[in-house]
Length: 116
Image 1 (cartoon, rainbow, N blue to C red):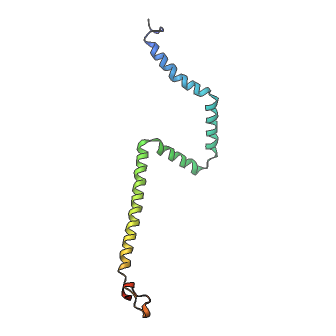
Image 2: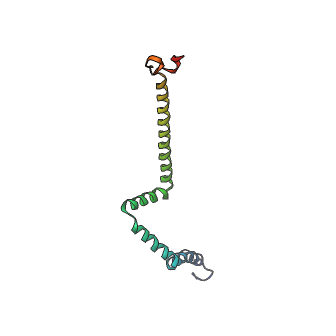
Image 3: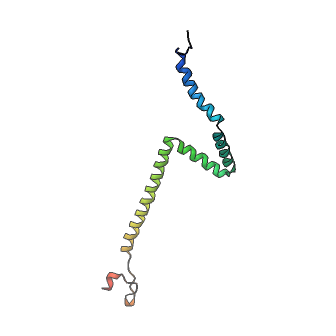
């Protein structure tokens, strides 16, 4: 009764072996140990501002909502800069057309349309 080869616990044992077996292999793998040591050495070489930037960027890029929020924020900033640039260009081009020309001898400083 119970945990024989074909019993009800066989499926659970196989699932547990598969789950924990891969974790065990990862802990004894020389490649993963080397990779962990190298990562720790590279993190130790970073300055505090670089560590802060790494932590913030890892946090933002690891969550879907944070990535979407960052995309929305950057899009709004780009639209604001574009709108400000277009507004500035239009206001100054209209203002240039309405500047009163300075009347001077020989046409110097006179609006080009008034020379004709």
